[in-house]
Length: 318
Ligand code: FAD
Image 1: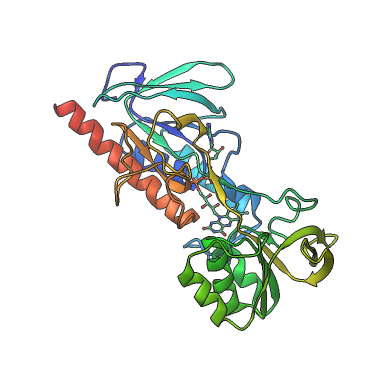
Image 2: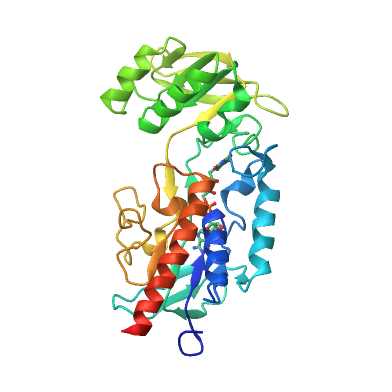
């Protein structure tokens, strides 16, 4: 231990790829991390069946199995894994200061000079029947991750913002036909993306439309769409539905403690994981509204542990 007993060097909040990766690096650097798993042990990948784009798995890997293995790898080293959620935090503004982390169940307070925030994000849902049940069975929140499963098939994307248009353009290169379902009568996305969309002849934009029903017994087979201008319904048969109506970063507990951007993501220094408070580092989706991938999360988890290690050494030397 670098500091006095009971004041920890490294607390990690989150057990997705960012948190686990940070734990491996922190433990191997003798920081004796404590990791809080939160409400979803293993993070978002535990909600998907097949991960095909993570390096090192030529045949792909089942999401929950992958995250179980990540946990096992963390357990090989000296990390204390606690199945608890963090309720609130009081973060010091002083260099070398002590951050206080309060737990939900027990209200116990953990003190640490270093904190790695890896609380991830969650996709926004439509709120319709079978939506959650069919995640990984045709319903997806990531075209880069799952688009390939629908090669030369018909798919739909929901949303009118930049993400939805990017997803639609990506899918148009692989799939036969892409329905872009937009609630409003116009697109919110940037003009450059709108122009690109118009150049794709296999994207069919359906304005003033909502998905009202998911069709299929064991997996997605189609959707029912309601046009609220013409008051008509139609059914389209698709193998994939990509919901791109936004993500919410899990930053509620940091609202008055860390600088967040207008969407609620933690602001970090360019190319680093350094946040607005000394000794607090952020990794993974919680600080990344752009890439949101398992591999980038694991990468920034590693960076956060290395940034923290450097920070602790500087504190000791001063
Ligand atoms: P998350 O995985 O979101 O984990 C966040 C962690 O923080 C969780 O363990 C949660 O319990 C914890 N937490 C949150 N709040 C608290 C709190 N208050 N206290 C304690 N803990 C807390 N990416 C790919 O690269 N390939 C894919 O094929 C792929 N498929 C996907 C399929 C689906 C259905 C979804 C939803 C996402 C998919 N992604 C995929 C994206 C990928 O899952 C995320 O980019 C990645 O999981 C982000 O990792 P993370 O560690 O930042 O956060």
